[in-house]
Image (cartoon, rainbow, N blue to C red; front, side):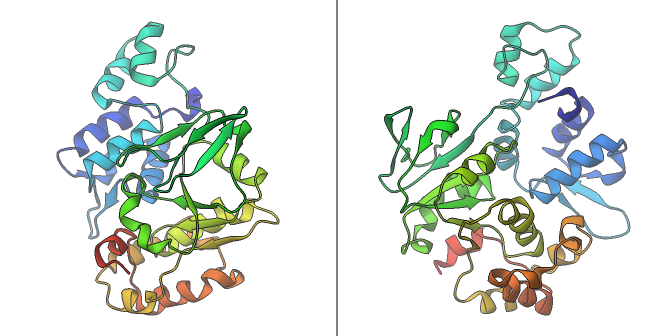
Length: 292
């Protein structure tokens, strides 16, 4: 991670406050902190209230801690102390930012994979299992030599908590041989997906932002690849009976949402119309509860 792309000390301190309380949005004053806030809100690790005075809050501290690990931050308190020091040792850098070369840390090159099926892969002609114990992930750094069978469908998962407990969603993927991929804060997973012939299925929330991320962050970057968005059969019922209208209203101002013409993408155009018709959204976690 370059200095320009590093999470700022002031933003980290705001995250620390958010572990215990909501704070006014106006506290995110600088342009770079506003940029980080936008990212964390878009990824749904932070939320924004409605009303005249906007507040930011953290809906799940454990999910936030997991997400921070994708930036090399294993412990927020230690990382804040690290940034406050004028000089650091390589040992300190390894401990709090997973980096022995740079003082302020950098991002890893790679991504997370897992499966609840006995799926195997090859890295440098060595066979490895992609079926970790429940609640754990497999991190792939040497992705350029990673090979998998062609009949495996790559399922991109947006939410880290869903990824952790993906076994609880296996009833949704009975007709495919799924290998689950969690987006990481680099382009390694895109490079790998562009290289392999396997089909891609996106598993996200059922809202306009998630669809826009699927289109701009994945589909538009793949050529000659079968790429689609997971939609349950009873999505009409789910959206119609959802009580979540707040996210829909917020996402109307999302720049990514504004940039996409959903009607140009046949596989999600009906879903987008349903969301706009009922002005409601559905989070993917709901599918684990109701066992669609």
